[in-house]
Amino acid sequence: MSEEKLPKAIAEGTLKIGQYEIACAVLDDAENTRVLTQGGFLTAIGRAEKAKGGEGATVDGLPAFLRARNLQAFISQDLIESTTPIIFEPYKKPGYMGKAFGYKATLLPKVCWVFHDAAAAGKVQANQKHIVAVCEIMLRALTNVAIDALIDEATGFQDMRARNALQKILEKYVSEEAKPWALTFDNDFYKLIFHLNRWPFDPNSVKRPSCIGTWTNDIYDRLAPGVRQRLHEVVKRNAKGRPTEKLHQHITYEAEPELFSFLVAIKALMRASSDWKGFQRLLQRSYPKFDTPYELLFDDDEE
Image (cartoon, rainbow, N blue to C red; front, side):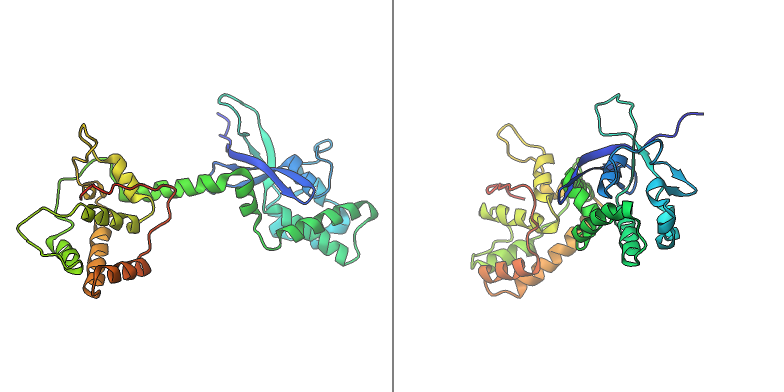
């Protein structure tokens, strides 16, 4: 029988709390479990960083650092169930076969509360007082911030998570392959633009000021984060770099109804406005642009 595949660390870092530096990682499992390495965990509760003679292993459901008899009254069944060590593959170069041991990061404040409560009840032993002092420091540091969030910052996983979230949004809205052309921005849309700018409108002419291309692009900036940039990345272009496809041809079938509903809402704002500046104020208030990590301006492109 083959060995069970270990979860891998996809981000590693050092969590700094006061004078303590605690090794931590984020795993590639479904929950992106945040862990403190075994040595880091022992450091965090004031123990020697290296476990002595199997100290990190569980016996009768508890690791060595919780087996003292005076602590038992302060240990819940939930805590016992969460003390199982996690074996994972560290973040190393491809082919590295080493293993690491750790605990879920959320175990740290639970263990700290055990020592805190034991001290408050006058039940700690002399050789545990230094652990109580460290646990008090940890609890003060963790009072207003979830430990998972601290680990995300320490490992850089918060940036990775943001990139992954943006990628999922783009996959929902933008298709690599162009769909057949279909009327999306209709004459009514352009007629309202002309009306708000006090321009004469000829329904039989397709010639429009180049600024309308910029304004149409602006719609995608308000639809979802990063969509406009991604659309400009996937459209085919000619030798001069000009798009040979319409942006809306790369909106996915899944996102098409949302775009159409969005355009209906925008046209309603246009009808409620007396001029272009008034519409822009109303548009920004109702549907502000999404902040994205990119800034692209294709001022001359038309839809």
